[in-house]
Length: 353
Image (tube, rainbow, N blue to C red):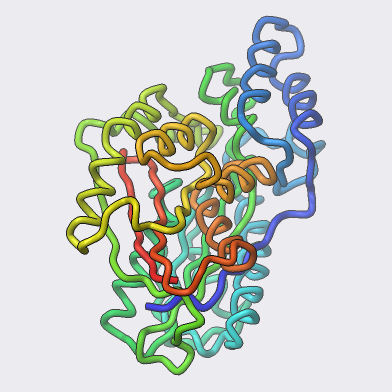
């Protein structure tokens, strides 16, 4: 599979971290100075400077029940998905009717018919497009979606497959939850969508100017299901986030990467660029230490975290898009994409630039 392009879309409502901290403190804990100071400390340590929200910030105090949040997810999510897809197709020089398979990943809202079904008429996709909605993979889904595109295009090497990630994390904010996970989430997560166009190796658009996916690896860690996820209630998605997440990165990532690369006759030192999900400062620092990377090796991931926050599954695709547009990775370089998420699990994608 060759990656022809990455399209990206962000909501127009952009706020500095300082603006969001003040608003969330006033909304979540106006009469509790101790909790307010804790919230501000979490926001300062998140490594985030700017974020985009699905809605204007003044709309959130009235957004209390799951139904209203989910209606907003469908409306805004479709707008962003369409924008990201049109951007990706334009960059690839392809049209909606060229798409043979559509994969949609998300973990911040639900829809039946699913978002992919709603995008068919909206985009003018063919009626025989193969639709694949994937829900619940969380932050790992951007890299896992690339892996599933790769699987599909191995079987259909003359076709075009499209991945779109839609994450509106702000719509999951819990108004009555002063737990540490909700306070952390209010300072870390942002909203956005990303789309990736992949073509099979025998497609006319495949070629040496497009990164090629060489191999993928999925890794599930037994006994870690309580590390990250959602508790779903009448008010929507309540964030579950354990302090053990950085430890899981520290304990497993290096061995997983080395085993994956060794099967292909490579070592860590032969990877010329690293594209990691911008999960947060602790996750990025643990990954850097575990993989013994130079200080600037994950700069694209850090920059994405600063500029837009953690976009769950879309984050690693934003990093991939920046690598295509800005990093000037030399031709022939081996590149490794890594994301981790609920399960707890990891997804590794090796590419040749």
